[in-house]
Image (cartoon, rainbow, N blue to C red; front, top):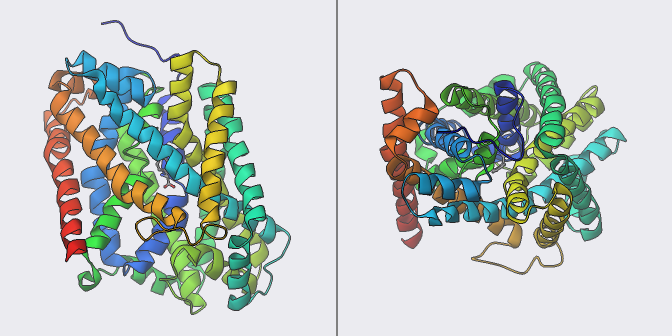
Length: 454
Ligand code: PHE
């Protein structure tokens, strides 16, 4: 069979693919969300469940996404369709790609709001607004920001523009150049922060909190959150990794690349925890502070420490870069599809998509002010978008991808594409994909429902 090529271009090498996919995976999920949900769910035991989910569910599904993407060489919508047809099944499997595009928009709309907070804090740290700030004042700064739609709108708009500027450049000039520059910067900044936190007196307490396994605090809801987060943090279940896989050079190992990406993502999340919790404990603050953890507790700590202005600036810069390289991958599948479908260049595609996500973001940022009373299923818009995507749509998307790749695509196609030389490893992957991950997702979903109904 003739080897397909993507009309969008291809990554220069396997390492660029790894860098780009790691850029997608490492984001607000690792640095903002993981520490606060670990904090809310009791720490260690939650972390253990999360690690198991990454290994048993996340890695096998990520391999499936990459191989479908590379086999189809198109946006997830068209790749799903073509690979299904190649395996003699209905092209309607493209619905998984559609659901992913929708999930991408929904995630982007609250992601961009949080990224906007981060930009605001970069500026605030840089100009010394947080020097010697007390916890009441830090809470006030954050709450005032949330209450002010205009300021939120400005930063949200800037973030949307930053993302679109990269996507408009396309795979080589836009995405590849961005990750080549930003990812090394991210790792350096992270190591600086880790070095700093290891010297604080709260380090061993923070370490204990993350790695001390106490199962008595664990509920089925916490397990669902851990599962959902393993999808969110690895960018799975919505086609981001599938799209990146479609630009991956042939003849490079999918399994090895995916394990590298998952390992880097996990390491960054754990390091983020090891940066944040020691600072929290050293200042006698509450690890279960929720979404405000990073925005309220940390500035207080930075405000009091020697050199805190610089470390605070470095920290938020790091978070901003991480959010940026992730947000790109939320929109790339839709951009690629517009280009394929209508033969547009990237400029009109990005204008259209930019307007869509910009508008959706306004609803998300309004959750904290002008539409704060508006509730869906008891959530405000922001929390609804977060809950629906991370805990419902991504696991569901992942479930469909696992079923599709495990039961509908032929074994021969999977063997061809993955080219795993050891039959043992291939079988381990295949069993994890066909049985372990679908059953795990289904069981956790059902147990949760039962718990909620009780
Ligand atoms: N993985 C990103 C994070 O952890 C979020 C994301 C989810 C990005 C899904 C793309 C797709 O922040």
